[in-house]
Image (cartoon, rainbow, N blue to C red; front, side, top):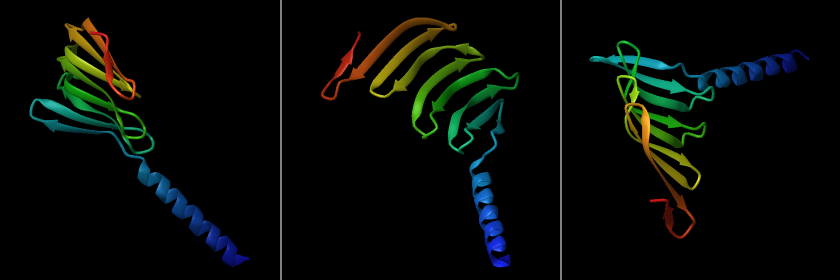
Length: 121
């Protein structure tokens, strides 16, 4: 009986240790005038990467991922304002959204129907 209890405790300890290894804490690293951020899901996969200004505003390129580690979006910020081309992936659909001063100026959508890409341009 003691052996069974010891084995169960060891198994529980091993499973608990493995589960804790997956949890990663968000990281923030000072790089010159910016702070590089890497944010994680609870399963240990990267959720987002990007940069902040010292004032805490989003800047530069930000990339988002789903819980399987697949890229779902790229975005551009300039001192907190949405700018440039943003891309959103969803299965066989790619959306391109153009921003200027945090306002949408154009949206284009492409769908892959298996043999060719269809655009709304």
